[in-house]
Length: 147
Image (tube, rainbow, N blue to C red; front, side, top):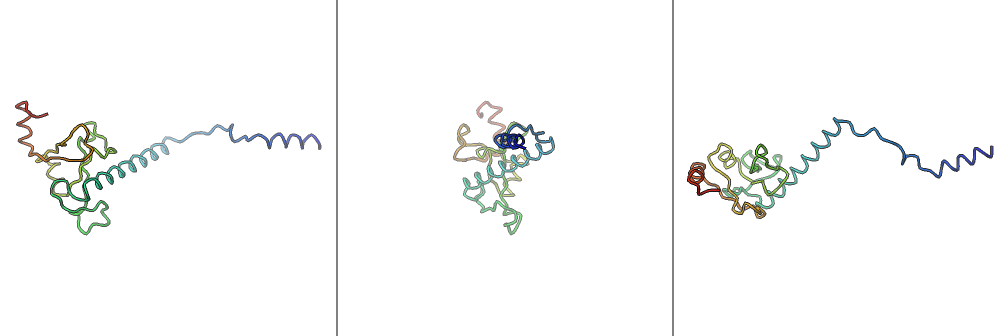
């Protein structure tokens, strides 16, 4: 009886949970967690870009709403245009690469009628952009004048 009490006292001094080896996270759980983290980072980047734009379209100045549930019409929803796009190495979680546009302006940019050109392409911190008709930008590049 005396011996068992000593064993119990020794066991209580050691926290065995520190030595436990967990199985780790399953692949599905890891993918789901990474998607949640990416989605949250992208939403934060959109919010930062929206605040930087003052809640307006950066081309025409139309007042916009970030959350679709608060919009009265689909034309009031802010569209986040990523420049450069993800397919060309753009980072959707970087607010410096996001331009806030209204529905009509975003449609013109995505249908390649307008090109987004950052005023300060190195910093992009202030978010100042210019919108150039796609044809004139192509002519400048072909003549060796554009970047």
